[in-house]
Length: 58
Image (tube, one colour):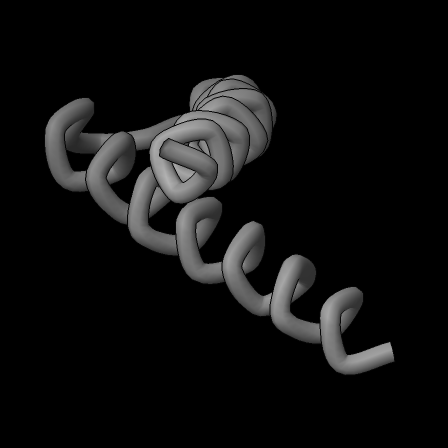
């Protein structure tokens, strides 16, 4: 159970940071741009977590 919470917290953390970065870099954001950025950030958060886990195994 603790591992799931850690995984969830890590994904949410990455997602929040990446979505915030998207919003800052894009400037004035429409609803559609926010949704696309949030979706892209979710994919990138999963990739970041996978990369971190792969680097840990070495």
